[in-house]
Each structure stands twice: as structure tokens, then as C-alpha cells.
Amino acid sequence: MRIHPVLIAFCLASCSASTEQSTPLDMKTVETTSTSKKDVERKTTAQTTPANERKQSKLIAKPIYDAAAGWGYDIFDGDKLVVHQPHIPAIQGNYGFENADEALLVATKVIEKIDAGIMPPSLTKEELLQLGVKLP
Figure 1 (cartoon, rainbow, N blue to C red):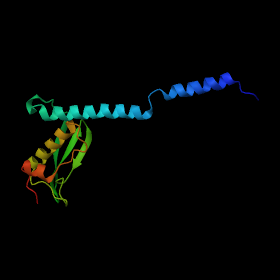
Figure 2 (cartoon, rainbow, N blue to C red; figure 1 turned 45 degrees about the vertical axis):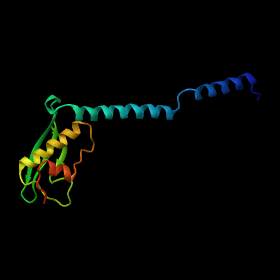
Figure 3 (tube, helix red, strand yellow; figure 1 turned 180 degrees about the vertical axis):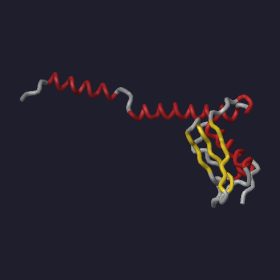
Figure 4 (tube, rainbow, N blue to C red; figure 1 turned 180 degrees about the horizontal axis):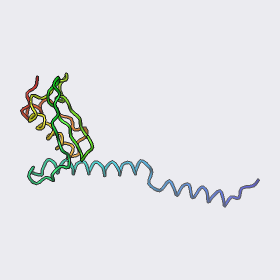
């Protein structure tokens, strides 16, 4: 079987032409830049928009109570349970909040983080103390 030199030249030309197009690395860089810009815009909006001008969240927090553990909270998106937090987050052990108000205060902070695109919406001990939560 004999391969014609024109056919070989055509194949080589088409291969070299495809390498001149964007590579997966270029596409990945563009996607990363695009995603990073969205994240920056989201975080900037959350930090610079006054609370009274922010859109109302579609998430709803409800306090939950366990006689053994104390107060916690659930966060719902419509009928769908998004977060179930029966204990105070960010501390060791299974301690509940002292009351429903503390639980809802922390749940509101978690909702703010979710709305700002911060995932996971974890909290630190310092943030809990700033909210006035009494830690065990």
C-alpha cells in the first residue's frame, strides 16, 4: 500500500493547524479568571452593600430544640433543608445555644454568608463572640 505525499502533507497541516487553536490550558485560565472575577464581585457586593439595600434572602431559619442538647437551628430553601445545626458551630463538643434568639442570630449570619456565595458558610469562635453568643 502506497501513501501519497499530498495526503501526508494534508494530515500534517491539519494537525499543526489544530495546535494553533487554544489549548485546554488557555481555556482553563480563562475559566478561572472568569470564576474568580465573579467571586470577587460577589464578595465585594456583600461587603459594600448596606444591609438595608441587600436583597431579601429566600432562605429561612427556624429554631430547633433538643431537651438533651439545647437550641439549634435549621435553614430551609423553600421546603428543602439546607443546613441542620443542632449544636453551636466552631466549638468542640455538642453544646446547644442557651436560647432560640442566639440560635437564630447565628443562623442569620450563616444565611448572610450563603447569600454572599461563601461556601461552606462556617463561623469562627470570634464571630460567635461578636454576635454575643455565650460559649460553654
